[in-house]
Figure 1: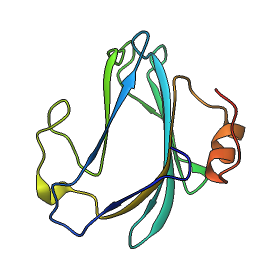
Figure 2: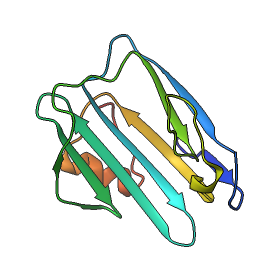
Figure 3: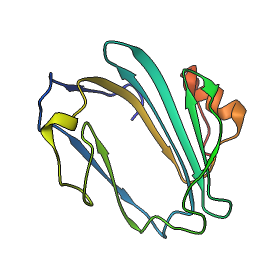
Figure 4: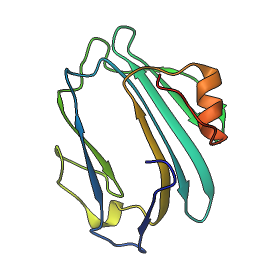
Length: 131
């Protein structure tokens, strides 16, 4: 959603954006990047690969230490990306006091883990080819 912005009003809020991904098959790898503007401006990317279970986070263009998470798991073909709320159940179960307040922009989702160069390019808002 390049150059698209979602604005969420101040807490508490029940506002959210639900993005439904049409997948041909379950995801075994993915990368999600977005920019957030709250009291602090940030750009965040998260990448995960099923075979190793490695989750990688990038914050303000810099990598954080990698973590192990759900090795061998797959994300079902009926995927839902929820922006603006923390979901306690699939696609719902919101607590309005856990809502996001601010702006989210430039949401990207790839069905692969990205290289460090592509992570940096996403941070710098450069044109990116498919993963």
